[in-house]
Image (cartoon, rainbow, N blue to C red; front, side, top):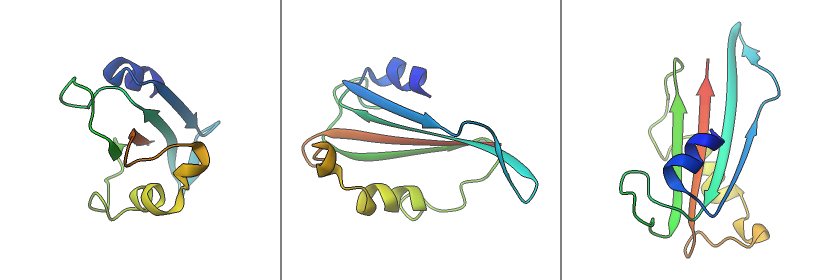
Length: 103
């Protein structure tokens, strides 16, 4: 995930985290990776992205069961994370959150 974010967005900063090993739920194995990037280019434009908080969700076999904006990833990123604790202001900074669920 880190390589893809760096290649496509060329951010000022990127942090990634993945589960140390595959997990399973009701017999279905899965891996979760997450990344946060600050600054860089927009996903589709190749130009400097506008300030704001952008959420990108990926899944291969597990369907994304919720509409964008109605899932737990979006709710946590928008309401539960205190971005100011990290000296980040989503109103002034380009913050992109990526979550990948692979089964």
